[in-house]
Figure 1 (cartoon, rainbow, N blue to C red):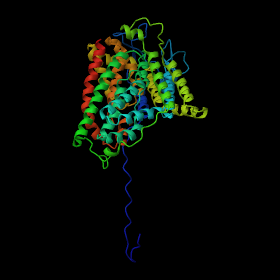
Figure 2 (cartoon, helix red, strand yellow; figure 1 turned 180 degrees about the vertical axis):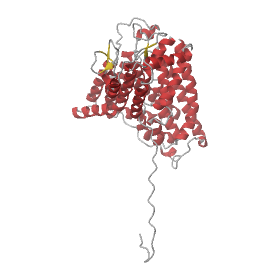
Figure 3 (cartoon, rainbow, N blue to C red; figure 1 turned 30 degrees about the vertical axis):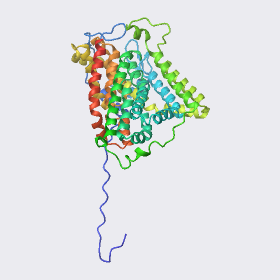
Figure 4 (cartoon, rainbow, N blue to C red; figure 1 turned 90 degrees about the vertical axis):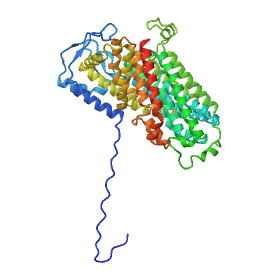
Amino acid sequence: MSTPPPGVTVDPLPPAPPPARKFGFPSALTILALVTVAVWLLAFLIPAGQYDRNDSGAPVAGTYHRVSGTRSLTDRLNDLFLAPVNGLYGLQDTTTHQVGPSLTGALYGSAGVFLFVLAIGAFITVVFATGALDRGIARLAHRLRERGALLIAAVMLVFSVLGTVEGFAEETLGFYGLLVPMMLALGYDRLVAVGASILGAGIGVLCSTVNPFATGVASSAADISLGDGIVLRFLMWIVLTAVTILYVVRYAKRVQKDPATSLCGFLPGDREQKATGDEAAEPELTPLHKAVLVLLVLVFAFMIFSVVPWSSALTGKADAKPYGWELDWSFPQLSALFLCAAVLVGLVARMGEAKLSATIIQGAADFISPALVIMLARGVTVIMNNSKITDTVLHSIEGVVKGTSSSLFAVIVFLVNLPLAFLIPSTSGHATLAMPILAPLADFAGVSRAVVVTAWQSASGWMNLWVPTTAVTIGGVALAKVGYDKYLRFVWPLLAVLFVLICGFVALGAAM
């Protein structure tokens, strides 16, 4: 900087204004912490009450009555302080029905689901560490690179299958580096890659059949088997996946025929990739990769076999006597299955003891966030239970849905969960928080609790296809360098079609 002439003063430059703070939507953990405090405060205002229970523990419609609240301020402060602990391993006293870590009774906390999430996280991380799944999808994409529509359908179908059985969603973020240049090479635009990734995996999660992070957690909170309602969810998965694939393929063909119809346009160099995008070598699939992929399929196939109530599914009778070969597994057995499977994959991949141990630990650590969300959400229900306001809230909702048909009731459950899914994008937290209230409503309406689970997960999945609170959506459009507004313009007609189809399916499931 030059010095001013003698006698000339120069005003100092004004300080640079501080950078504007951008609003960041709080995490699911923060939201649930706020919900915990809010519910604790509301418990002072909401009157205590309860229903009479039948032999299975379900509330009996029309028996709600007020009861005197017996919780002192010290007791209530203790409930707030111990909410996360009770949410993990709180025990429900068989006489007073209060929940606490030192009481005697059945486990009320989510310890079983908590461990299951960590176990499946360890398994998935070990599988990804072998490179088998990434390489398998890359090989599929390369082999179909000259058949664009088939490539889109194949990638979306694989993502959808993974989404419906194990909640595959965030993992799609690792495939944009492959899919974006592949789609550009075929004459498509970047929105096709976004649609194939977000919608492919998202529609699988929306129609989760045995997805442990959605259907599994919700079924546990609703006190039903993971396999209950699987027939309806499987039919939904077939129809909605087909509709979504056709929607993306139709848009892709339109752009390929007339690039001017692209909703996102093309960045400099995008159009030039069409002539040079096929030069990459085909990824090799080694015998190790093949073995790991076979193990992956077998593990999830066995999980499905172990949890499905086959006698009920095949006969159509909810009270059918189980076949002798049914396993009727739940979260303890599934946790052990995935831990053993993680070790087996590591041994097949010859990782070595140190690497395998570190990978399992890393996998559990990567999945600690959804596990903590489940714990916190369950802690909220403990506060409601100990304050005896759960039945009061249930009674108020019962008045809203009373007299509605079973089909309309199922649609209302779907609609009620839409705003909750926006506030709590974590499917696990949303399920744990909502199911203790929603599941008993099904008993009042004469509807299977499995239909409520399906309606809930449909609402969560539908919202997570587009809301900006999910890393899958925001991260996906950012990686593909597509404006979020362009993505919304692209996806809203499909969202409208899916909305109608979901309402139809849940209404049909409730009426059957």
